[in-house]
Length: 435
Image (spheres, rainbow, N blue to C red):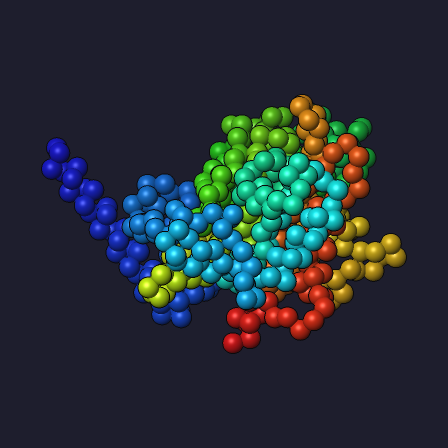
C-alpha cells in the first residue's frame, strides 16, 4: 500500500515536471514572453490558481538572500533611478521610474486624505513604476506598507470579480435588468422582479459603469453561486499573497455559500472583502492583458559586492480568465470614466476629457467605516489606453468626515502625468516598446 502511494506520487511529480518542461519550451520558443495566443489549456494545466495540489507540486526557486535584507527604508533615489544598498554591500536596482514616483507622491500629498496609497505598473512587463503611501499622522514619511496591505474593503472594485464570473457564465454585457433603488444598498426586494416597483431598466454594462448595486446583485443572484464567485475571486488573487520583493498581505474574500441576500451583497461589493492597492493594480493589469497575470516585479537586478550581476526570479505569467471574458469586462470598464462614477474625474466642467485621445478603463469603489474612527474609503483601479493598454493604476484614499477628493481624481492626475507630462522623459515601458 505504502509502495503504491509512493509510486503514485512519483508519477504525479513526473507528470507535473514534464508539463512544466513543455511550457518552458513553448515559452522560450516564443522569445521568452508568454504570448496571449498561447493555448489557455496549457497555461491553466501548469499554474491555474484554482488547482492548489498542482501549483504546490511545481518547483519553486529558493528564496534569494538579498530579499530577506531588502526593506523600503533602504530605498533611495540615485542617478536617475532607485536602489537599495544592503547590509552585505549588494546594490538592488529597482524598477521605479523617478518621474512617475514623483508624480504619485505629489498627487497623494495634494490630497487631504488622512490615509492614501497608490501603485502604477507597466501592463506589458509587470514592472512597478511607482508605489507610495501617505499617513497624515506621520507627515514626511512614505508609508509604502499602505500600498502592500489590504487596509480597506474592496468595495465596488469587487464588482470586477463578479462581472468576470457573470461573463464567463454567459451573461452578455447588454443583458437588461429592471430594478428599483440600489444606489447605496441591496435589499431582498432587489433580488426578484416586481413590476410595481421596478420602474428603471438598464444593462449589465451600465450597472458596472454606474456601480448600480441592484443590477449587479440581481444578476449575481440569478446566475452565480457562492462557490462559483469564490473560485473566480481566488483565480483573481484573493486569498493568496502576490509574489513581490517586499512583504505583501493577501487580500481576502469571504463569500457566503449558495444564493440569497448575504451573497448578493458581497457580490455587489458590500464588505466581507479586502484589497490592497498593489493587488488592485495587479487586477487591473490582468484584465488589461486579456486575462493573463502580469509578471509583477520591483527589482530590476542585484549587483553583488564582488560585481556579480544577479537577475531576480520573476513569477511566471498565468492565464486566470478566458481572453474573451477579460476583453468584455475591460470594455465595460470604459463606461466608468466616460459616463459612470468616475466621469467627473476624467472630464472638466465643460465635459472635455482631461486626457485627450486616451480612453481609460476603470472601476471605482466607496464605503464608509462608521465603527471606530470614521473613514470614507475611495477606490479607483484601471488601465490606459483602454484599447492598447500600457499602464495600470490603483489609488486608495481613506478620507475623514470632511473631504473633497475622490480616488479617481487622483488617478486622473497620475495618468495625466504619464501621458501628457512635460519634458521628453521616456518611461521604461515606452523604451521597451520602442525596441
